[in-house]
Image 1 (tube, helix red, strand yellow):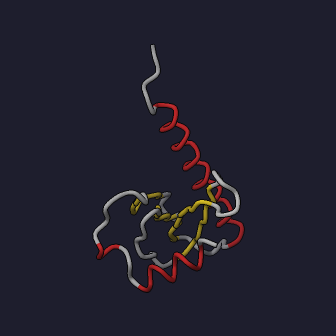
Image 2 (image 1 turned 90 degrees about the horizontal axis):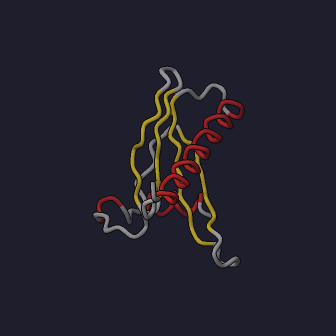
Image 3 (image 1 turned 180 degrees about the horizontal axis):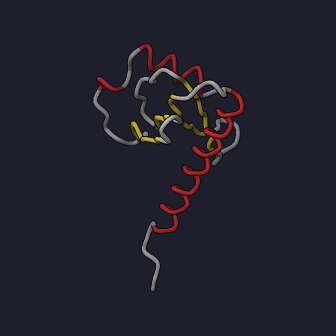
Length: 114
C-alpha cells in the first residue's frame, strides 16, 4: 500500500510529542513527587544562532498557563491517571486577540523560551 503525503511526518510528530510528554511526567515524579495535578506547557522557537534548529521549552506548573501562539498545554492528574490536551496553537494560525497578547502571556513566554 503506498504511503500518503504527510503520513510519516504526522506519525513522527505524534511520536516525538508522546516521548516529550512521557519524559516530562517521569521527570516531574522525581523532581516534584508531591505534585499530583499539574500542567505541561510546551513551546518552541527557531534558534537564532543555528539555522534550521528548533529549540523546545517546557514548563511544569500547578497553575494553568495563559494561551500563547505556538504552544501546547496538557493537564495531568496522576491521582486518576488522566492526561488531557488543553490546547495546541500553532504559530501560523489566526488566533483571536483575546487568547494572545496579554502582558501575562508575554511574561510567561519570555520567561520560558530562552
